[in-house]
Length: 77
Image (cartoon, rainbow, N blue to C red):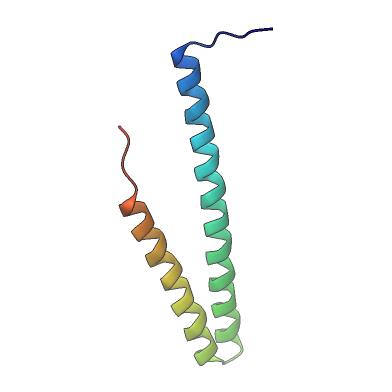
């Protein structure tokens, strides 16, 4: 059974796939960042400021990396 998709339907399918890929990426990124912030907060609550600093430094590296990735991606209008 052959299905003839229009250019619009194909474009919509690609757009939906792109959105799902970005959603999955964003979920993973936010999960990792939340883990780092939770670790920092736990360390602060336990008086381990040097450990909190390490978690926060790692968090900032993750954020800076994500910002650089977003800036490097071509925009689609």
